Length: 314
Image 1: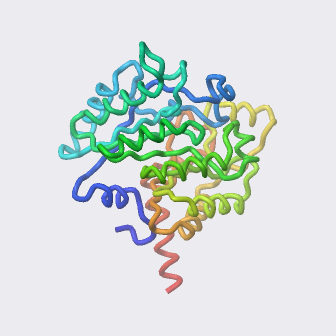
Image 2: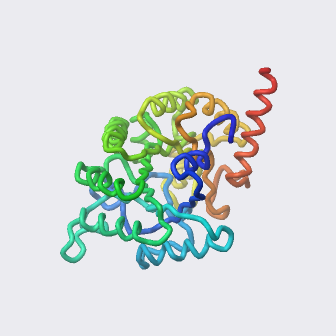
């Protein structure tokens, strides 16, 4: 067991005792309300979904086909593995005519239920992980997830990114921190496990602002946190803003981000799991910072740092 914080392996072990569980990403062809014109266009200034969508995820294929492809991928190393269907790309509770709703005679909600139920019906799938935005959870969607959670566990990952509305405006997020708080509470009251996604190093944010976000986040009824440093990705609005001088950011050094994460670990109670600290995009797409390090390598460096700190304090 990790002595410094609850990691994601421990979190899954608590939820699925005696079973090894792996996420399989699913691209169901959703969009986002700040991409399709519902509330805005262009998306978040840093976002390029292709940087974290696995090669077996094609929205032209069915949910079942994608899950079976993912199972074949992981089966080579882990034949006894069970799986979580991870609806990852874009906002997977966003139901509108331009998203996978209103197809044929089905309403958006019926289409959501069809997609999720199809995933739960695939052999060896033991639950759902649904990634989305805080402003894409009307009451009928929360009720749907509550019903599905009675069949198999449902986990929601909300893109909060920061608790500061001024920053949310800068990054073109187009939702508020209050919406995040309200959605977390409604999902928790419905019995749904909630995790929050956070980004550190966003434009204009000081270290104290990042710590303030952590303090606010851990006061909410959440089960996990997924965080990473801000990356500048080729072809994103953020790259253009930096190149034309409209925006400046101070990207983390590797050691600077390790220092930040060391402090954050001390602020997160063990009941809340920390799923990850790093995002690893394809190296050829990363403009900055170029660390050349993988998630597990960063975690090992952080664990060594935490161990050394403990030794010094004793």
